[in-house]
Image: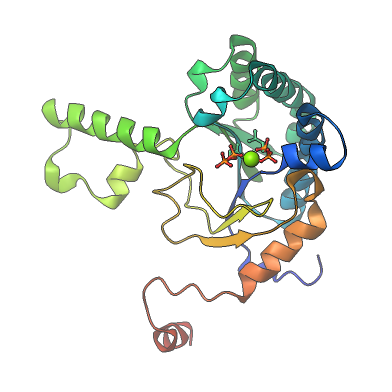
Amino acid sequence: MDQVDKSNLPRHIAIIMDGNGRWAQNHSLGRIAGHRKGTESVRSIVEACRRIGITYLTLYAFSSENWSRPEKEVNALMALLERYLKSELKTMTKNSIRLLAIGETGALPSRVRGVLDETIAKTAGNTEMTLILALNYGSHDEILQAVRKIAEDAKMGVIESPAITEESFADYLHTKGIPDPDLLIRTSGEYRLSNFLLWQMAYTEFYFTETLWPDFREEQLIEAILEYQKRERRFGLTSDQLQKKRS
Ligand code: IPE
Ligand code: IPE
Ligand code: MG
């Protein structure tokens, strides 16, 4: 952790936590055991981010496409989520972590929704770090919903076409008020976005690792941050222009 440059931390890290199933298979266990082990990584990474000083952490926990998995697995994921939320309130309070959720959380089982809403409400005043869980999240759906809402607002005269800017459009997304991710991490050697934060990641740095999510802990997180700190984020400019801007 000492090697991490505190003056150049990613403000927002987003993670596609992938590989629980393969981890379980490698250990001759059922997929659900892999998800259970994955929860330990969630705890460890949330804690590490808080300690390092990351202010926003978004975790892709359940995609809108994941409903198509076997019913038993979906139920187990929901039960794990409920248990995780119940067990973490104390730590979130102690560490001043605010919880938010993105995605169609209204479609989650009512017990999960209940504890989710309660945890969000109880942690709303926490200020040190924001943990955002992507639950029943799909980027296409999020963007389409935004477009529909803008169309309605335009019809009602609330917004006019020239006022639809990058900034005002972003306010129609679930991530309203949250800065775009600086660093995306995907575990398990898959090189795709799987419908995650497509609008928000236009200029995000991508980091892919072969490590499976249940094996991804603080040490691996620090490796990812160190790699991020080697990158030059040019935002379309030349390297020379950036040097001049900095000096
Ligand atoms: C990620 O692990 C967890 C979720 C998608 C909920 P997977 O369950 O996708 O693990 P693999 O990809 O099958 O190994
Ligand atoms: C992405 O992982 C979703 C989550 C990590 C929650 P998947 O395992 O569902 O992604 P694909 O299907 O391999 O693209
Ligand atoms: Mg997967």
